[in-house]
Each structure stands twice: as structure tokens, then as C-alpha cells.
Amino acid sequence: MSYSLPLRASIGFFVGGSTVRIRLLAAVSVTAALALTATGCGTGSSSGSSSKTIKVVYQQQLNNSNKVQATFLAPMVKRFEKENPGTTVKLVPVTASSNDYYTKLQLMMRSPSTAPDLVYEDTATINSDIASGYLKPLDDYLDDWSDWSQFADASKAAVKAADGKTYGVPDNTDTRGIWYNKKIFAKAGISVPWQPKTWADVLETAKKIKASDPSVTPLNIYTGTAGGEQSTMQGFEMLLYGTTAGGDALYDSGQQKWVVGSKGFKDSLQFIKDVYGQKLAPSVEQALGANIGAAVGTEMIPAGKLAMGIDGSWMPNNWIRNGSKPWPDWESTMATAAMPTQNGQAPGRVSMSGGWAWSVPAKASNPDLAFAFVQFLETKDASAQWNAANATIAVRKDVADDPTYLKALPTNKFFTELVADTHYRPALPAYTQVSTAIQKAMESVTTGQASVDQAASTFDNDVKSAVGADHTVKGS
Image 1 (tube, rainbow, N blue to C red):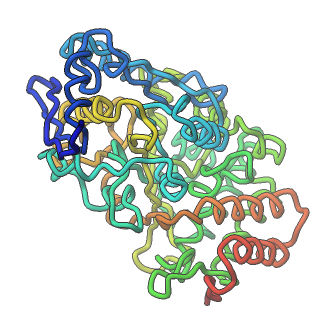
Image 2: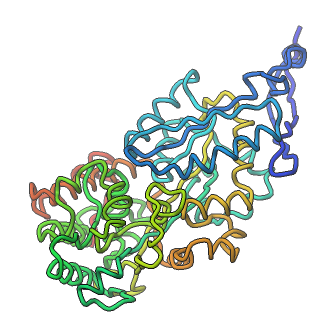
Image 3: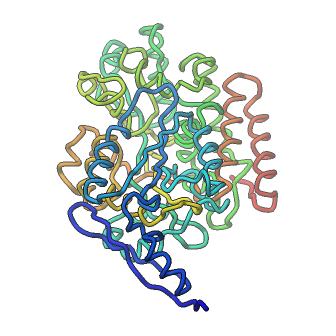
């Protein structure tokens, strides 16, 4: 006869020079517990046991030779395996565009036979995966991890679901602004440092550059469905959240409803239409291609063919020594400016923040070892190394205040200061559908297939279909 009783135990893993114990809470039978002990299975104590192997999935951008994450993870894996003899960490890079990566990740997580043990999640899609039941809550692990108190509250909020549970450990955040080429500006007679006060200032500068040198693309702003979330976030939301609607531009947090029919939405579409209609941006064919992100960072900017780009804090990871396009002159050539609000209204600048996190799939075979590896990746020293290497903004408070981190790249201080005026996407499962609707609206005005009013109307209908008309509110 077997009897069920609660088992409280812990497993120790070596993390950054000290042993971390992960508490396990389960209900097992006495006979089952004895059998596990006899065979060495279940706790991962047996050398060579599958319970001491984890699969770690992350994205490798399509047609992008940037291997910054792979370069960072490889030695971390060797150290972890050395400090924890018998463990094996299998890195599984998924080469795909952003949207395809999300799709492939979800397909993998559906079945226990294909589910990884650890996945790299964009905080834009994490709530969608939570709602689908693909991710495991990590609260029991986090309760016993003292370092969790070092993570910024805003970053914690990005990985917390409506049920109040936490489903990921963020390893970076980011901010966005305008990158510009000082040499191109000087040739066009534009004084630097340059800081536009309104959208009109940005357009006027783009026109001056086009008149000065027609061979240079004045401005890149991402658009269309092929670009996925980069179109929504670097492209559209950098405009929308700078309208008079402000922080509730996309989702009215007070009423808990999605905003449709707003003037700010139409104004943002009009900016996209103006930029592409006046040929101040890349050709429509190039802008709507899946490779535009890689082309901007590794071809157009280093070659001096793009004067301005609305883009993120991570851009230098294309140009640093281990980047996909090492470019020693980037520090003397490129400068940064904050994206202005539409009409210069307070606070005068706008940014968007997102980031990525490590999550454990609900059907992972070895979640305990997976979380131990997360702790290993997220120590203060390892986090500082990763944020510096990947040109991302720190989520650990002790790293963000570290002078070494702030000086690792000349732009770290600028992009870190933008956090004061940044916005975060609505952390709701429906966001991914709303984001897709935004991309469709952008693409239709970029190609000229729809007017601003038509595109905005289609967006409104798409959102109402996705979330229900009773979950929408008309914006101002």
C-alpha cells in the first residue's frame, strides 16, 4: 500500500560561486519516492540522467549575422556545466523573423515531447502565451531568490499576468529615439547636436537632407506586417504615444478598454503616409521586406546611406567588435536625439520600452534546472556583461547604477535617461492581435492602397472583432 504525503525538499545548483537551493513542493507516494531514490530519477541527481539536461530556445534573426546572444550564451553554458557536473545545456537557436519565431515557439510549447525547458520571450507576446497556458508561473522559485528584489518594478510588471503571477525573468529593457548621422547632417547644413521639438521638425530635416543629397535616404520608420512588432513599436507607437492622447493612446487603463477612433491614431497614420508619400523613407518595396531591420543596422547606416532612423538603444550591437557589422567609426559618426511629441507638448519627448525575458514552458521536462540556469544568467555580473554586450538597458537596479555599465557604451546614459518618459505596451493577451491590426493599417497607407480614414476604420473594425465591441472606447 502507498500513502500520499506532501514532500518538501530542495535541489542545490551552483550559481556564480555559491549554491542556490530551489524549493520543491509536491505530493508523492512513499513507494514512488523510494523508487525515485533507488533509480536516481526525479531529482536530477543521477549522472547522465535526462533530468539533468535542458533545452534552451532563443531567436536568431533571419538573414542577420548578429550573433551577440549566441556569443554570450556559449561560455555561460560551459561555466554552468562545469560548476554543475553532469548537467547538459542544449542551446537551440531558432532562425526566423519575429512573427515566425513567436509562431514556432508556440508550436514547440504545445506538446511535452517538443516543449523546451527554457524559452526567450518578447514581453510583447508573453501574455498571449500565458493566456494559452504555455508558460509556468515562477512565483515559488522567485520567493526563494533574494536577487529578485534587485529587478525594477516596471520590468517585473511586464512579465506579470492578470492572475497576479509572474511568468518570466526579464534580462533587459530598451528605449527608443532617433539615431542620426552627424556627417550627413553637416553636409546638409543642419547644426548638431540636433534635437527636434515637433514631428514637423523631423519632416523638415528630412526634406533638407533629400534636397542636399538625393542618394541618401533621409528617414527610416518601420512599417507593415513583415516587420512585425518592430513596425508597431519603433514605427507607430513612437508616434501614437507622442500625441495629445498620451499614455492612454492605445488602451484606456481607467476604463479597461481598447481605444478606437482617436485623432491621435489618424495623425500617426498621416505621418507614415507623408514620409513614404514624399519619398523621405526607403522605397516601399524595401520598407515592406522582411529584411529591413537587418538592412538598416548593417548596411544603410554604416554605408552612410541613411541619415536618420527611429530605432532602439540596442543598435550599437550591430557595430561593436563582436557585432554583425563591426564599424569602428560609429561613435564619431552617429548621434542620438529624443523623439519629440507631436506638437512639442509636455513632456516634450517620447519613448517606448519593451524587452525580453526568460520563461519556463508549462510542459518543460526539467523546470528546476531551467530556473537554476536563469539564476546563473541573471547574477549582477552576468547581467552587466549581457546588457553591455547587447547594448540593452539594465533591469537590475544595481546594474543600472553601475558606472561601468553606464560607460560601457557612449549611448547608455542617454537611453537610460529616456526611461523617465517611456511608455510600455498594454500587458494583455489581446495586444498581439491589436499590434497586427496596427501593422495592417500602416501598410495600407504606406502603399497608398487606403486613405488614412479608411485605414483607421479598418483598424477599428479589426480591434472590435478581436476583443469585442463592448471592450472598446472611442478616443478623443
